[in-house]
Image (cartoon, rainbow, N blue to C red; front, side, top):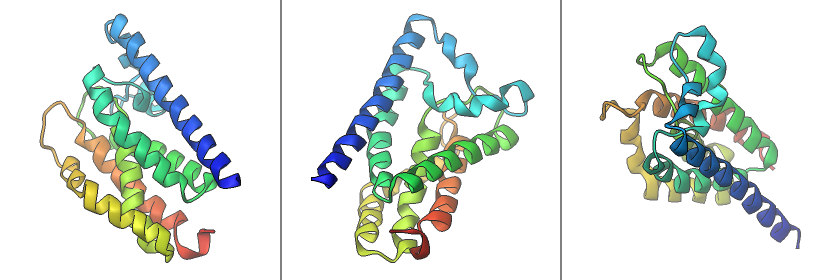
Amino acid sequence: MKAIATVKQQLSFLGIVAGILLVLEVINLFTGNYLNQYGLVPRHLHALGFMFTAPWLHSSPTHLIANLLPLVLFMWLTMQWGNKVFVKVSLTVMVLSGIGVWLFARSAVHIGASGMLYGYFGFLLLAGFTSGRVRYLLISIVVIALYGGMLVGVLPTQRFISFEYHLFGFLAGLLSAWTWARRRNTV
């Protein structure tokens, strides 16, 4: 019974996250993308704190929809390592990808949940192998098999896509897996 409650709690949390993303996109849509001024602008000190708001903002409904389903799925899969690991991974990815973009990205307003998406992706690719546990290894193998093509997204393939957020999110996810998903840290 406890596992069902945990799954219900996880799904409820994911529903809230998705709901917030959708509400922000509707507000942005009706205000001419007003909220996007809270995106991350590299090397502008006033924008450094926007590493915490940028992942919640999107340039269009299409941009949000492209991120939403894999983001929620990867968040849920990351939650399988436990709440503490999920929170550590989330914060690490948000902060390290934000700092990476702020320091090294092209001059532009960087927004979107894809940095987080790639962070969870990086975590999921490596975490099963570092954990030494079969169930986690299976998650990693399934993610590699179904989503391995996402690796191309860390390359500069399209002008208006922040490959930098993808790259730094992915690297932060790998670091998170190495740090918090190793055998000694998993339950």
